[in-house]
Image 1: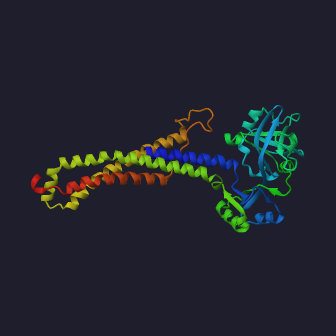
Image 2 (image 1 turned 120 degrees about the vertical axis):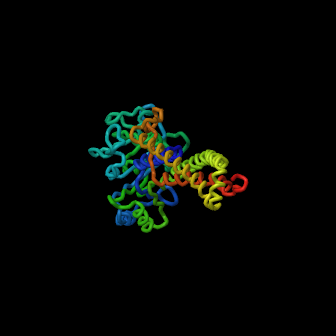
Image 3 (image 1 turned 90 degrees about the vertical axis):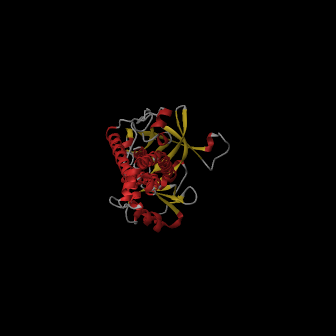
Length: 371
């Protein structure tokens, strides 16, 4: 039961993290293999557009900058995106104020995280109070702290999103042309974000892009964009599984002593069976079967209770996290059949190993001494 619940909680956490990152990150991301930017040419764009399965290509310029509103400042990550960014509908469900549209009536609008809004007390859709964005000007850097070393642009805030603290406290979305002018870029881009066509397989599209673009670019799917984090979760899940299995192995000592005591209590019965022609193999298999019955019954009861508790948690969420700042209120769980099969095999194998020694002792019982 503990194994089922523990594995299901880690599965739920893995899916929660995937859902959060997949909402913010693209299905496929193209970045330069070397350096921070790459040249966005018409030929490169045509190659990507002609790749089977590619639906939307969003051009991105992303870098650190300073956001200022009245007397407050904050270091943020500015992300300039092309007009078709809204067509990907990744941010629609996370808008808490304003709109995701950054191009309104010919005017550029910024989409900021809720944490950035709280820190700077920035109003939404206030035409009289734009925010200022400072970006280092590589052509005018004179000395540290000099205002002349920055390029400065103003923009109004048109929307606020809330996804997760890491994003809410750092990101500000702006139109691509605004970011390009601020950072003095021409055709340089830091990445391309791809949305695949409906029904297309993301991995197949990724393989085609790798083949078409060659080795000059890194082409990552959603999991590869956060490979380290997901790998850490899998390692934690594996360690918890090993620890609980070790505890289970210690508990199986009870099966060993149970069968040992059964062997001692049934010595005369074993002697009678041997006198009637029962072989050592038959006696050994008899006690092994007893051990497997204990293992199967324990596995069945534990799996039943574990699945029942996870089912109730999925539908009713009676075990809460207990913190107001958490993303969700209750612990996420997800049952997977491969985990249940692995747990069943683990329980049965450990119990079977615990039953081997008592069954061997029973098969070697001296007939003359106990008849």
